[in-house]
Image 1: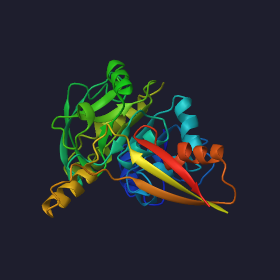
Image 2: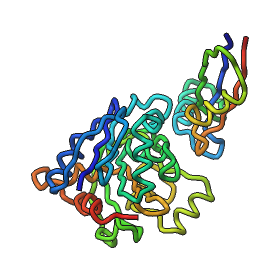
Image 3: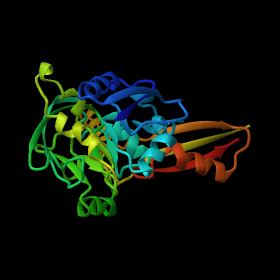
Image 4: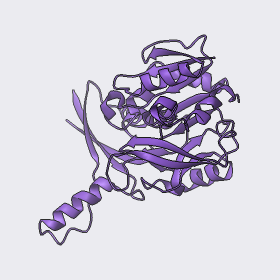
Length: 217
Length: 77
């Protein structure tokens, strides 16, 4: 499986994602945001960081960059698309995922391990469902919000992928990650790619990354 | 040339955590009359030609996120 790791100016988790995916036996390749095509790729990883310095809003400029029409094309074709941290913000800004991410309730930048529960029946969480995962977070703007109607739909249609066991950033309903209506696009604030190596002491993220090979809308 | 001033504000229903912190600071400075602070953005755009349709498009496509923000604008000479 060939996975495009999208790089924007200011991405900084691209190498973590690249190595985690390659170590799993997938074929990750970097793709610059200004590239015009994702031909030949089976999946997309939108990594974390501070794309465009978080100017205007987190992920706003990246969501409108040239490569994103190709990311949308793959998403529409049912390919797996995952966005982590800033990548989650990018996917919400691009309209591929519901809601938005605002500054943490208590303003602090949070850099710590959190416990997550996997919720939805989507392919992203099939293997993880019922487990509690320890995954690191590193964000200042991770408070998930949506209007009442969207939140009801997200909850009612099983689009909540992950919830924080302890709601660290004030997210509505403790939501840490969501999937798209068709289930092939997933965004989450915690970093599974930073919890994917025994040498780094945590492999809880593998159960999430492995889902890349199961997802197909 | 025209300048358009675009004011982007967080929807009133959403917690503005930065605004809350600033309100706390003002109160600590002795401004006990402060009831609340909301922080928004002022964006000034220079335009060769100011048309409402185009300005609204710019706001809807990039400058404001309708999920979390409202905007209004004024064209100044």
